[in-house]
Length: 155
Image (tube, rainbow, N blue to C red; front, side, top):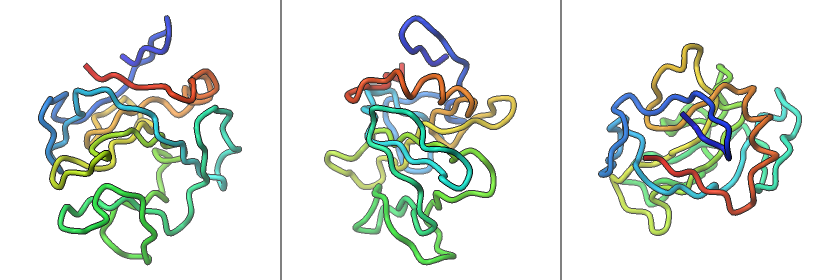
């Protein structure tokens, strides 16, 4: 469950559960204190969400580098179409709203996991690749209420 103040919302976590030691591609959600870094949204599908967080529209070239051999590992990058990084423009609606969670980013450690997002969930709240997912409709309720320095605690 995702607890926001006194309210709880169902959520999905990684297919490998919660782990203290996180590795790239392990399918686990890290047990950690995860600061909310910024919100991304699909302006072709949604209006700009109300939030005190930093907000940015997703661009067609936006991707997240998940290649631990790349110097840009665990960072937002601009990519040419067709590359293997995690593209933020998806055909499904899971990334209509994405909250970048601060994981392995200060400093970045290779192979310790990348792209831990809080994003929309699949029907049935099926497991993620390590992210936290909630029904997309819940974002409209939660985002306006989060302080600029909000933190997600996974335990």
